Image 1 (tube, rainbow, N blue to C red):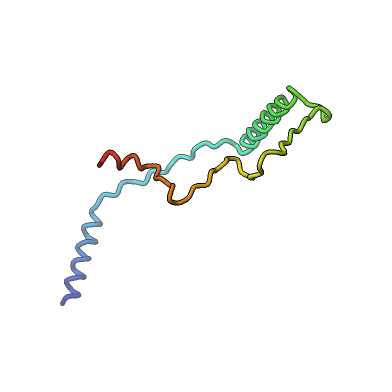
Image 2: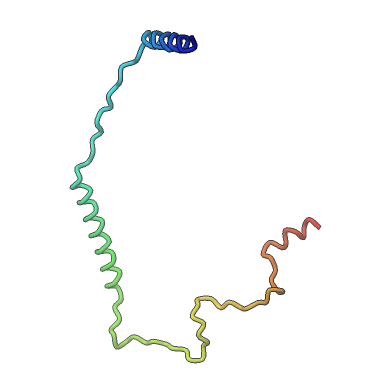
Length: 105
C-alpha cells in the first residue's frame, strides 16, 4: 500500500517531466588558439632581449682584475648578521603596542 503510493507519485513526476519543454543544447564554437610555435618564438625573443640587456649592462664599466680593492676591517666584531641586535632582558621588554592601552586608562 505504501509502495503503491510511492510508485504512483513517481509515475506522476515522470509524466509531468515528459511535458516539460527542453531547450536545445547550443554547441560552443571553438575559439581560435595561437599555434604553439608562436609561444616558443615569444619565449625566444624575450630571452634574447634579456641577454642583450644584461650584456649591455655589463659592458658599461669593466674593472680589470688588478684594480679590485677588497677592504677588510679587522677591528669590527664578527656577528655574522646583517643587523646589530642589542640584547635585552625579559624584564626590560615592552610591548610594541603598549601605547594603545595608555589611552584607555
